[in-house]
Image (cartoon, rainbow, N blue to C red; front, side, top):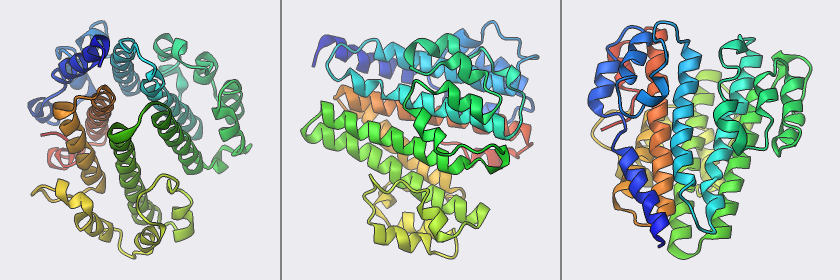
Length: 346
């Protein structure tokens, strides 16, 4: 392993040491306003630099979430810039995920007819030089036509063009989300195949297989419980191409009448080894906790740079989800107890 790549492991672990701790989460879930969260994060070493010039009394919730995302991306770029090896394309996979998330954010804004002014101009300054997407156009998109046009020079153009409709009420958001997921996972396995062999290739693929399986099971649960979707609709939104769960077994799970039986499947599957004594009220918590435990194991014990890097990305994503859940919980006045059950930490 090169000295430069050893630096990535050291930087990843150092940054992970600055992550929010259980005590931080316990304090934040008791806060009553987003401004209180901003004030708290401004004093935290992981967020103080990005928030130091922000007026906590004036910041919009959407602006806060974008600044948190900017902070995350800046941290990731610091690691990517330390890579001096032929497998750099694997590390740049994180940019693909950022692109997908940003496209979906703008699409949700268009569908919900939200005010885009609060997020315009915030992302291009930290993201534009790292992507083929014209982010100035993307962030200015107020219609589905404009969104698709902004993606013209990227691989995403044909993906979204397939789902073009004039009426925004007919936009098939879940289908688009599925196609973007497929693109990301295809890129992940392609880049692993191009760069790695042996046990490292297997371990990295296993991380993505686990992510896909948990994502599929969570999607089945949510589509059945909250949308009463029929089995065919559900199946068409699952990532089947890279799943280790046999199609026959997935069919059985899709056909389950009670969505809560999916949790029973998890507790009797190979994932049972990651279950602790806590009752899993939310399937998102169960799925996230499994990913969290696996990532922490790699962060502490792995010696291969790609494994540590992937673990760092996973743990950073989970921390971001925790903050989003807290911010949303405050907005909708969710109780401390219920909010605590949604957060993933030790």
